[in-house]
Length: 248
Figure 1 (cartoon, rainbow, N blue to C red):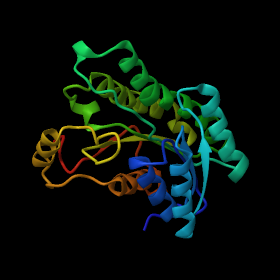
Figure 2: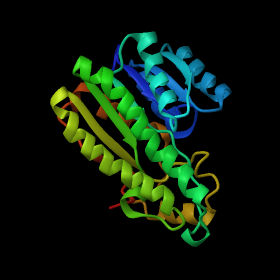
Figure 3: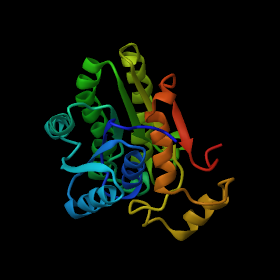
Figure 4: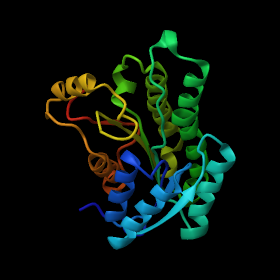
C-alpha cells in the first residue's frame, strides 16, 4: 500500500468527478487533503465529509485557479492549516466542445484559462513552500486529447497538450530541489464534463480501449497516489496514460 501518512495535498477541482476520486484516494493513503472548489461548496463539503467518515483528514477551500491571488490564497490556506504542502494535484478543468469553425473566443479563452493558466498559477504558488522544504510532488491532469487531439476539442486538446510541455519544463527547473513534476493522461472517464458527449462517441471510445471498459475516478486517484509517493521519487517529467490502452 502507498503510504502518504502526514503528507499534505491540494487537489484543485476536488469536489466532483476525477478530482473527487483523487482526493478520496489520497486521503485513503493517509494524506491530509485540501479539497479545492470554485463554486459548488455543497459538493466539496460532501467530499470532505466522506473522507472524514472514512477516518481521513480534509478541509474544503474555495478558490478560482484562473486568478493568481486566489491560487496563492489556496496554497496559503494549506500552509496555515497543516504547516506544509507536499503534493499539488492540478485537476481543475472545463470543456467548451465545438468544431473550430464554430468556436468563439470565449469558448477558447475560458478553457485555456481554467485548464492551463490555472496550472501555471497553482504550480507557481506551490513551488515556493516546496522549494523551501526541498521536497514536493506536482501532478497535473492532462488527457488523451492532449496526446492525440480530438474532434471538437481544439481548445481542450491544446490546453491539455500545454500541460504536458509545462510539466516537462518545470520538472527540469526544480528537479535539483527534490521536487518531481509529472502528469497523468486519463482516457474516457464518465464525469459531469463528459456527460454531454454523444453516446456514439462513448461507445467508440470503449471499443477502441483494449481493456474494454471506461475508467473510473478512482483509477486516476491510484495513479496520482503512486506519483505522489516516495516510491516514485526517481520519476519526473513524465506523462502516465491512465486510459486502458486507448492512446496506444
